[in-house]
Length: 239
Image (cartoon, rainbow, N blue to C red; front, side, top):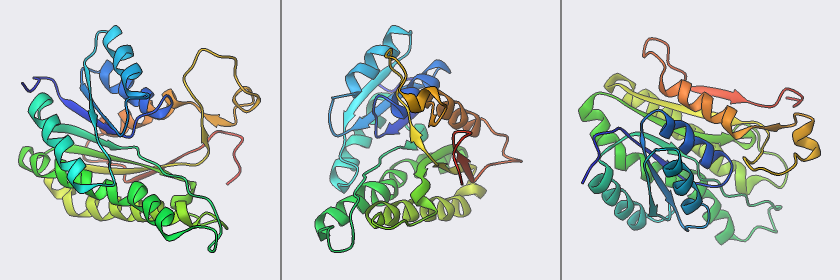
């Protein structure tokens, strides 16, 4: 049975940003749908949110596979209702030179970094359009803006995801759907109870909770001043 609370759907969950996003939106009364290929990190995040008095469910989903995406979102709609927020947080890192990357690896990286965002957006936009509101948030990277040597396997998909966000924003903003692309220009830390690494101690990594707070603020923006794209980086980062 669908929940009366708004549903925030996060595709791509891990112990860093995915967990922080789930916690932040859960703290604001959203039920959280966590979509991923495995339960490796998903179950721990669900346990954490539940312990904090929130509500979260996990769904198996391969974002690169249209059939898997369709089944997962049908299950989300049945159990939690139509998502009010979609966060596409999937990333696939495939480094290597032109002659080192085999075609299958290159294609799979593009599917994860770009194609999956297209598939997932198609699942949530119709209901958002009918309601006259909704939020789509896409996680980008430094490679969204710059194709470095040996990084074509990452940059091509991330460039595409950025273009997708721009196109969807222009198509659906008049329908009340806020689309934003967030460029994460740096390494993301992890929310754990261990000693900080030297880079973390020196402020050279982005704190997941700080990133999640920015996503929440974008979601809450007044429609008279919407953000389409935002860059986030730690203060010592050169750019």
